[in-house]
Image 1 (cartoon, helix red, strand yellow):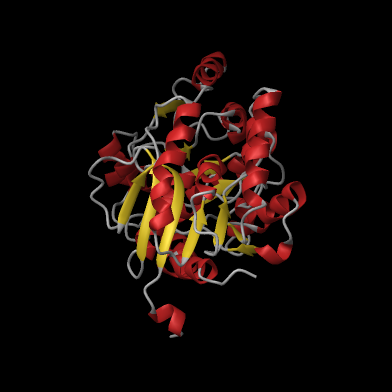
Image 2 (image 1 turned 90 degrees about the horizontal axis):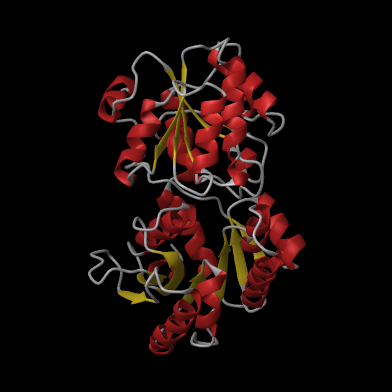
Length: 385
């Protein structure tokens, strides 16, 4: 053990929202990372919407603002509330979202190393969803301003390292690739598929596909629904559960109705966090049909740890997770006919699926949070170059 490892570090993490009140991959990542860091270190967490009595294992909470405030008020309150950071005796700062990082920068100790964990290109994601030009430009300015003032970066995949380097002109010698992690105590195999389906009141006699996704364009859920329409004659017993909320809910419902898939495709809405491990275990296969800007895919790890294999499109960082395990679970392209054909191959046994235990073992051996958090900690505590 090095001297650095043995010391208790004082780390400030700046997140986005308070998980699980504000779900999402970034918020879950920060929640898990800070919990594991706090096993050894003193961790301060600054985020929006922190409850008055969080009841968690941090040394200090900083509630930057209320989540329902208008944007400019949120930013103003973030700057005011972050002034207490000036008095903190810190060894490292870990930023996760540029919008709330920018007003904090002037209140952070200058000499403390600042590491930004790049979860995705905020401006490019907004452009993909059709946001207006000025909004996209403003987000891009926020991002670049913050990135230019950070000492180093963590990305969850080589794919997003490439975006950070190419789009934001960050030198590769500042970029560290550390994959995301999964809580293998929570996401594990502790129910049979039949037990999990009974718990959720899902059908016992169907081949169940599960896709927990935000209902936005780049997630590709419309392609997945189209794929179900294509394969229903060859796999008539298939049943798809889409869990999530978002602006495409109505258009997806209309698509399901127009294709006559009401008895095969179910938009189950937002799934409470405590039911998520159950839903993975209830499914025969998780499907992630992303079309663009999928930086990593924590869903993949959660599903594998729960014993359920995952089919993904060849987008972003997702292939980096699955290729060492089984490249047969990556489609050739993100298009609906290709997704449909791959599903047919898997569900008719022409391509073998890994067992539940093989899925769990791969997640546990490669992405267990204690090991991932230790890698992140080493990077955070490096002195600035």
